[in-house]
Each structure stands twice: as structure tokens, then as C-alpha cells.
Amino acid sequence: MALDLHYDLARFKSLSLVTTSGIFGSYSRGLTGTGGMNGISSSEYFQSFYFGGKFSLGIRISKPNKRLAYEIRPLNIYFGSKYFLYNSIMFKVHIKLDSLEN
Image 1 (cartoon, rainbow, N blue to C red):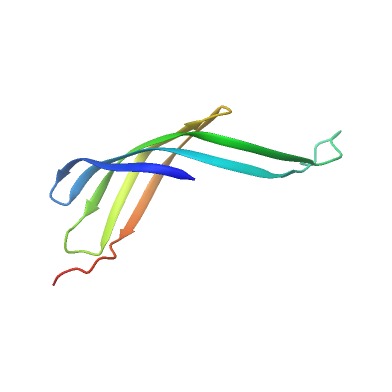
Image 2 (image 1 turned 90 degrees about the horizontal axis):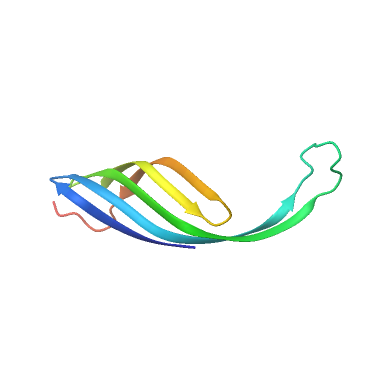
């Protein structure tokens, strides 16, 4: 589960500098295998709850008369409990569902 706040920091015509900040929570459970390791002969069950925050920064191209918008986010940082730290590059395609005037 996550809660995000998306915001356009600056806009110039169809180009926007966008940012996202938010929080998330995740519950994981499952079974770890032996992994083929010597000396480990049984699997173990695990369950854990993780929580943390996230931040991203990117550029969006959205022309008013087009149904598609494109977004590149070279900076995505996720951090949280139990030493969780993750970053990635993200590319998004947005499809506008509202009707466009001709």
C-alpha cells in the first residue's frame, strides 16, 4: 500500500519538471529455500512488515491535444525499515482518458 503526492515544479508549454514524494508499507511472507547451500537442509518460513518513503524527480512531455504523455524519471529513491534502500530509472506512458476536443 502506498500514498503518493505528484507535483509539477515548473512548466513550459508541454514540458514539465515533476516530482513525487510518498510513503509505503508492505507485508511479505513466504518460504525461503535451501538455495543449494551445503549444510542447509531445510526451508524456513518468514513474515515481515516493511515501511518507508520515496522520492522521484523527472521530466514529463504532455501535449494538450494528444492522448499520450511521456515521462522519464532518472531519479527514484526508495528508503525504509530494515536497511531498505533502492533506486531506479523509470519511463512512463500516461494515457489520458478524458475526451479530447477536436
